[in-house]
Length: 70
Image (cartoon, rainbow, N blue to C red; front, side, top):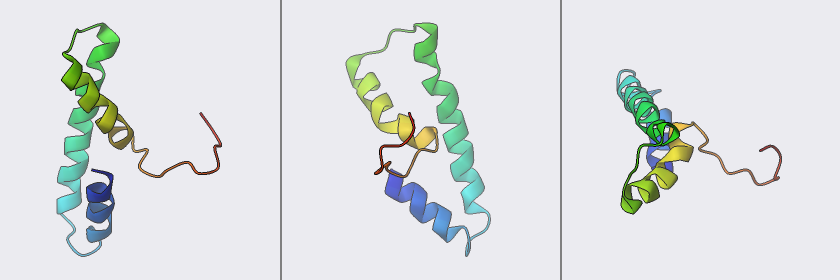
C-alpha cells in the first residue's frame, strides 16, 4: 500500500485529478481507524489489517532509518 501511495503521488504530476480521490479514501480510513479509541471490539483479523494500514493513513509512508522521533 505504501508503494501504491508513492506511485499515486508521483503520477499526480501527470494526472491531476486522481490524487484527490486517493486523499479522500485516506481521510475516510482515518475516521474508521479512530474506532478502537472508543473501545469498539473488533475481530483479530480486523486489528491485523489496522496495524498494516495505520502508517499509511497517518501519512507515515517513509521509514525512519535514523531512529529519530517517536
